[in-house]
Image 1 (cartoon, rainbow, N blue to C red):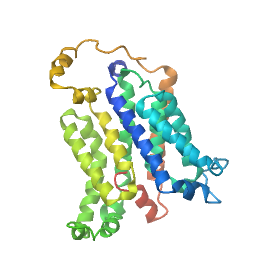
Image 2: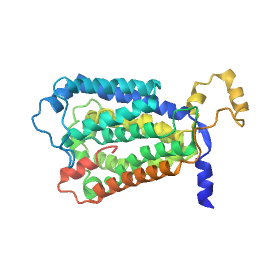
Image 3: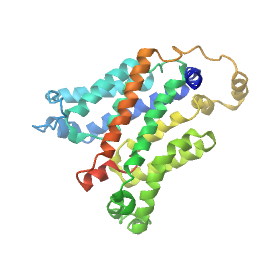
Image 4: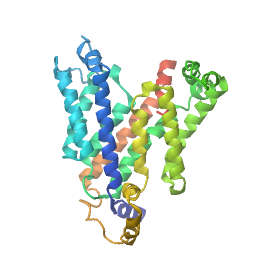
Length: 330
């Protein structure tokens, strides 16, 4: 049976080194996000100074901590990010980070950012998945891959609209504003460049996951991914840490022991190859996900697929709404 083969493949123990790297990078970028709130004065500007907040339906009861409480809250998020990065009670830190970070995002919907929502989801996965040992079940890595891949897939789907493909909007406006850049400024004001980048961005988002999954194209696909996100970061600095989240997150598509291979020095490589077929790691905490965990993951996946579909397929009320949905890189 196909299902049995998939279950067996998913429960196979693999090295947890790539998950460790994923966790470390996520913790560091979480810390960077928190520090940016302090550095730019956003805690005061967005949460303390306003007398009214545009709450989400059903969450009007959420209010910012009074006075210095919001500063203490963000400081705690920073400490939890450090805990995630260094691996100190990482599941507990990730769970508390999920609660604290999601609380901040639910206070006011005008502060919503796609990648902050993604950070909440990933912190929840880090808290729930069995990722805290030397080996992990293969299905856990595929869960993280799916969470990274869904960003690109739905970003590509969102770009399949007349504004983006037929009129190169909003890139024609965004790129034109960079006409003062040295060397390439004049080029960015050309209409054909906006069209090329619009179509190229849609093609990138719709296909990059497939290229990352294919072993033969994975390295070159990742190089292109890095170049793509560095370009968007330079041209659109308001993307904040989003490009870095994707650059770090996409590493989960490489083989599970890629950090060990990268850090291994030449004399040790032979020993690593010699032990490749042996049980070099202790058994993972679990094989196939337990029924409760499997049901929770299925529900989690269903929600993550249904919500973007509902938003993407709903007719936009304005061109600005469509442009926001189809922003560069998701």
